[in-house]
Length: 392
Image (tube, rainbow, N blue to C red; front, side, top):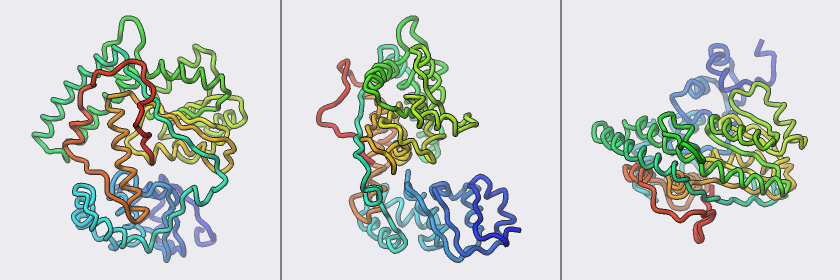
């Protein structure tokens, strides 16, 4: 009976399952909200969306470009098939020259192709009444045990990755590279996240967790309402345990949370002072304007995803200035992730604004930088003079 209705709503998860019926239905207008869900042209949701028949198509997204230009191609392949060529010619004509060789000519040519179909409104233009958002990098030092494990693991992974690249090349070594980087990221968070790490007989397993607890104590005393994000649900469990020890009540939202409304309601009503959220489960679709402080426990490759998470608090309805803290282990892979974030943000800005210089040139040098050894660092450092926070 779908023809009996004026509006049909569905989800990206259901679309591929129902495509047999929906593909037969001629639509006047087809709108994809959170259109970055079709950024991967090989996904079932993307393929199903492209099968739908519609006179007009719209993509709505706060993050149309998250990692690379191929995602923009996927959105335009849905909107105007063929406008940016097939994926192979797009890579040759735009991705390689812009991302690898920083070609201003190709960047301007791409901007010219997409500009007539792009309407961009920033939050500053739309929500002029929003209070300010301040971003702060909170530098932490790995403790002695973490540094030892980090360096041991880095050496082992460095050899493994180099051997793989020698055999297969960078493009076909992505899984091994990501595995190596994941382990180093986990060491930066807490040694207990790494199965084969040797835990210290006594003392702390995480300089970052210790720093967080000191930080939270001060923030609680100031009466701040806090959203705390991590990509690792296992890390959130460790933070939970520390909060329980201190008899601090909290709300929790992860992919395992069946009832999302209750923790949101408890936090928004003031019943809970801190809300622990996994980045994947709570990065979008939540309105948490009761918060005035956001903490990212660990950095993610994608600055757009982090910013969307921060904007759970900094959105229409917020009355207080919002402070966003990024906890980064100095000198480690996390610091290099922050540098990559800046470059990805620059790429997105240069495309969406229709100008600016190109940023990312991901190469073997990136891998070398990410797997570089820890430098000797002075203890107890929270802020580096002269360095600015990576902005998105």
